[in-house]
Length: 245
Ligand code: ADP
Ligand code: MG
Image 1: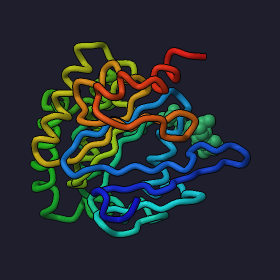
Image 2: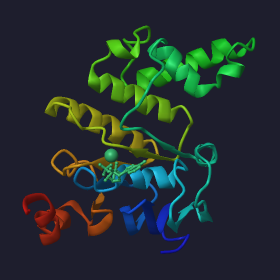
Image 3: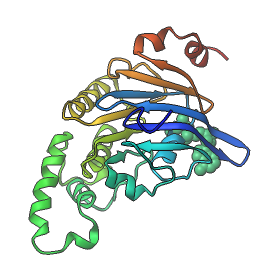
């Protein structure tokens, strides 16, 4: 794949940790405006793929392109500046700060926070962002007081604070009840409706197939299937990965 095959393109992406190949010659492209499912069993290499794309780890081999430019090994900070945000599976909000302050912190770095004039404006922006992700009633709670679904909303709000064009969402549905999956799906749909491209990770397809336009399925770091939800469901290799040995 090449730089112009999608808004975000991974070409032959490989990540080794010593003898373990966590991501194995993986190529896929994300189309502008879509919700792409990125599916694979636990340990398949989904988070590592995100880590290689967003500058957390340099890939061992392969290339990453974003908006037509090569960004292989770019710094996290530069990816965010270019419009690519992510959520973390194991996120660590500032536990001693309120929801509102956590979002404000994502909007404005600490060193600028106390600058006079900035406070009121970002506060309003942060309140609006909290409302957008459904935390309007939780502004003054600390993260630990939120239910699990609320933590996910906070993490999504934190990612949105950088005003991204594309968000990589890592396992938002793990541990959620069905009703919460529906609510969070609705929020992701809304984001996409507002023009944000989304890549949504899950370790199974159940909660995801009604949300996504397309999916890439990986196992042992390598792509085993790609296509529409119907194609994915019917794919023998996918069925093998989930039902077989
Ligand atoms: P997934 O997100 O699909 O559940 P991961 O990408 O987290 O899978 O992990 C893929 C494989 O890489 C696993 O075997 C995991 O133990 C290994 N791995 C991930 N990160 C590291 C790391 N920093 N050092 C060593 N091994 C790692
Ligand atoms: Mg993971």
